[in-house]
Amino acid sequence: MISQDHRYFYFVKCGNDLSVDDYSMLRQSVEWSEIPGELIRQAIDRSDYIISAKTEGITIGMARLITDGTQALIMDVILHPNYQGYGIGKTMMRNVMEFLNSSLRDGQHILVNLNATKGRESFYTQFGFEIRPTERFGMGMAQWIHK
Image (tube, rainbow, N blue to C red; front, side):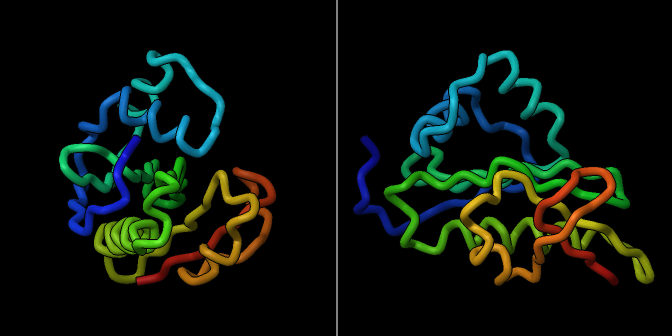
């Protein structure tokens, strides 16, 4: 069991060095279904950007981003339940949004879509997301980022 007493969290950006075991542990902590390690490795390898929150070497939160430059999909935003009151989820999302903003050139725009948002809409509206359909991903939460 992960202790709740830690106050110092480290965020790892732009590296796909998240371990299969950490990904599995986070999925289990939020009662998501188990998936084979091979599929987890493929998901990690296909991600263009991963941010993970770590304390004492243990991953306690993560978010994955896949983008083709015109659309982006933010996936698997997971935070271990012991740490939901520490603002780590907001920090992860801010880092992802900052990365997307920094990757755009002047005049560019990108459509950002979310998955796994059921029941957490109020969290994502803080970042400008709205519930709306998109052609590629269907009904969900999305927003345009313009630069």
